[in-house]
Amino acid sequence: MALKVNLKQFLDEKGKVLELTEQAKTVFKFLTTIVLSVSENIEQPLIEIDLRCNTRAAELSCEGDIEANCIANNIIEWHCDTCEASGTISNWQGSMWDMQKPTLH
Ligand SMILES: [Zn+2]
Image (cartoon, rainbow, N blue to C red):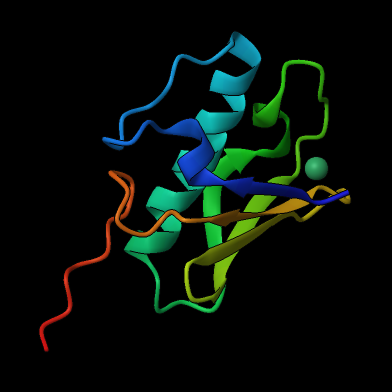
């Protein structure tokens, strides 16, 4: 089952991270690492993230690598190269983990 996350759900109206449980913090760190890597390499078709699948939660044992890419405006898709784990992250643009250089118009 894909994990669909709206990054804004973790943030207050000022863009600061809400109080999270330990479990949520682990997932959130995983997701923001993906956002950082993808937004830095936004022009690449597929980005290898420096994360293992089991970084998402303490009880996971999969040591597959995580790959991600930006599939649509404001949506990042990630998946594990070993197991079925996958997900999407929306509303990451403009957050503090968005490393895209501002485009000049
Ligand atoms: Zn996996």
